[in-house]
Length: 287
Image (cartoon, rainbow, N blue to C red; front, side, top):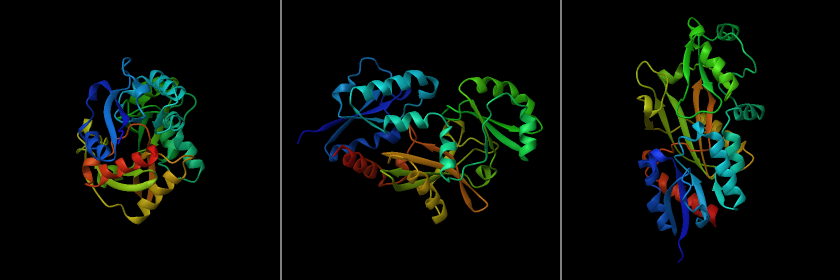
């Protein structure tokens, strides 16, 4: 049997893949697919020698977006299979995609999308928000993300002004359930639910990422959470190879915070069957 060759695109900092992504190698090999790490920004890697490219831990893409988008376009022009698909990657790179999903009936965390300079204190007051999260529209790992209160909103005004012009800014209502109940992450492969985790921040923080002391635990989502997350994936124009739906429960309703389609941590280590499910989805897509 001739092995198919797949590049798992990663970043310089994780040139040998993350521990989580390494769990995918053996299941793929058993299905006749040889997978190897490849730094997306490496000018010497021969992408044309691959049967497919799967975007994984490219966790610096938001800092080099024009370069990243150009690289994706080169793969596309070369006729390479890329997952997730290039059109989906470009769409997902700007959090403005949340507005598209909201227009399709998906409930999102209440969000303000400024197009000009405004006074942050006035924004929060007008919406009745005691606290809010200020973030760039192009970002990852909570980069330049700030929790602000109405009392001290003026201290965040310089960051707001900076982000407004590049790469764009958004302001989301702070969901207190993040600190009390945690944030859901539901993972899907080829449109089918695989597993879920609940992520919680360290005491006194709001960021759930490991970089800031956050933690996660495998959990079974209640039916209304799973149904809402499934509706998010079903609302996409194309079926993604992988997707992570991040959201929070509020008053018994699941609110979407982010839909991760580019380089999400998939928490393969949190579910014994997840690596095999992901590998099977890859094999099915490759035919």
